[in-house]
Length: 109
Length: 119
Image (cartoon, rainbow over all chains, first blue to last red):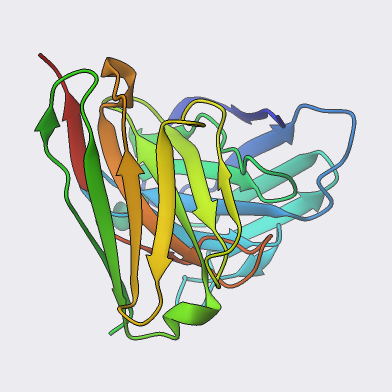
C-alpha cells in the first residue's frame, strides 16, 4: 500500500493568513499527479478541493491551490477565511487502496 | 440536485451484520464508480471498498476483505455494502462516494451513516 504523510498535523492561523500543507507519498514509485485534496468539517461530508494535484474543483474558491508531482505535494490557502477552518486530507488515486493522509487540522489562532 | 444518501447504519453486536445502502440522484449513476470510505471516531479517513460502474468489478481493503461485500443495482440508482463479522474497529461513519473514473477524484460524497459495533 502507498502510505501518505502530511505535515503539519495541525496548525493555528489567523483570518487573512497564507497556509501551506504538505503531503508526501512514502514509496519509491511516484504517484504522478494522482493526488487530491479534501476539506472536512465535523458532521459534514468531505469536500473535494483539488484534483490531479493542481486542478481546482468547480465551485471552490480560487484562494485554494495545489502543486506538486511524483511524491511531494502542497496545498496552499491564500488569505484564510473563517469558513476554511477544518481538517484537510490528501489522497492518492494512483493505486488501490486509495489511501488518505492522516489529515491536517487548521484552527483559529 | 446531485446527491448520495446513505442509510442502514445501526448499533450491532460484535460478529453481527448490516446492509448499508447508498441512493443516488441528480447524476448519471450508472457511469460512476462508487467507493465506500469510513471514519472511526476521532480518526482520519480510511478507504474501504469500490465497485465498478457496471457492478462487475469490486475491490476491498485488506481490513475488510472477506467480511464486506459491495453490490449495485443501476436500475435503482443504489449501491449496497453488506458488512458481516463486525468488529469493534469497524465502528465508524461510512461514506458513500462517487468518482467518474478508476483513478478519478472523489467528487460526490454522501453525508454518511453511523455503524456502531458494541456489546
